[in-house]
Image (cartoon, rainbow, N blue to C red; front, side, top):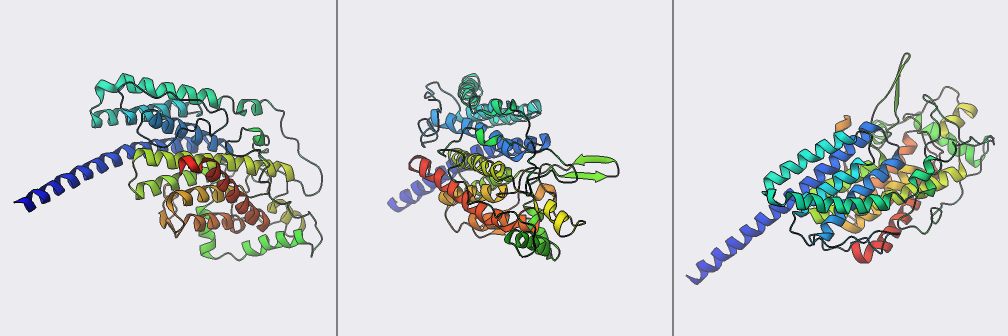
Amino acid sequence: MRISIIILSFLICTGLAGHAQNKSNTDAAALHKAQDYLTEIIVHDIFSPPVASRIYLYPHLAAYETLVAAGVNKSASFYGRLPAFPAIPKIKESIDPVIASLEAFRITGRQFLFSEERFSDSMQVLIQAQLKARKAEKLLNASLQAGKQVADSILQWASKDRYKETRAIRRYQLKKTPGSWLPTPPGYIAAIEPHWKQIRCLTLDSAAVFRPKAATEFAVEPGTLFHKEALEVYTVCTSLTDEQKAIAAFWDCNPFHITMQGHLNFATKKISPGGHWMQIAGLVSRMKSESISQASKAYALTAIAIFDAFISCWEEKYNSQLIRPESYINSHIDESWRPLLQTPPFPEYPSGHSVVSGAAATVLTKLYGDNFAFVDDTERPYGLPDRSFSSFHKASEEAAISRLYGGIHYRPAIVNGLEQGRKVGDQVVKKLGPFGF
């Protein structure tokens, strides 16, 4: 009889634990859906990669801080850990923390988007579905108000990151010295975000703190190091394997891809490099069936790493202002050559995808371990097959080398960019590690 009671108690307890876990998974699913909505609008509105990193950052910080203030997320607030970050008061009213965090995400996210109503409408449908599923109608007003209060604090803090000031700076002037960056075909788009280094860093002491070693000295004579680096790009790209082409396509992540058909030009919309890594953070969180507080932490820390990585990378891009392989090869090796990928509209050194991938992979490795295998389905909506990786660092290395296969970067931009990104990621871990990891 006693054994039966013990077994019955065990079954009841494990059943309750399973129910709690399922509910926790459902809560996290709502945040994952919110992330998907945000990515959808960022792609639709065609934001540049640096600007996209900013749009990911603030809504996820708002959701995270709401969960912390509600006592659901036991991790510490970012108050005192990020520059001038606001002190978010503890939420004392009876609320539904999931509804509150989604509302904070909605209010914050819509402020940075062109299609703000489309995003807001999708989020409100999500909130209503959660409200019904959680039977939290009586807590609706208090929950929405709590989310709004956190969002207002985050938006006030965001307004002082110097983004608006960079909109008012005079336009970028092309340098006329040999080896300097020039706009590239087919769009010959002007330089993107030349003043991004002025955006407020989060964990870096300055935008230049992890500036990579200087790019190779420009030269046009055959046999010089720079000419050899350009020749490598040309040689590799003229004999690509199917696998190398697949790698280049998978990590293209170019929101600015221009398709030309006769006299008609239109953009093919794609996810940004930062967006790709935010999706990886989400898919790994799903794999581990994490709670909403765990998922929110993963998103927030990954977003911080990506945000600082773009500032660090862009500081050097407009410091060196190096010519792209397409421009150099057309002038000094083969005037008819075109890269596999479309050259992005900003200077070459270092590789942005390499820096961002190195930073994100370092943070995700700290969160989930060094040999965390996963299948990346991020590019499935864009018609590309999934790719499998044995670790985050392996994925970052593939993302980096894809830029050589794509013909848009010399090797030093890839190697040094990846190292730079890992230093940024290490700094995020060092600065936030005692609290967030």
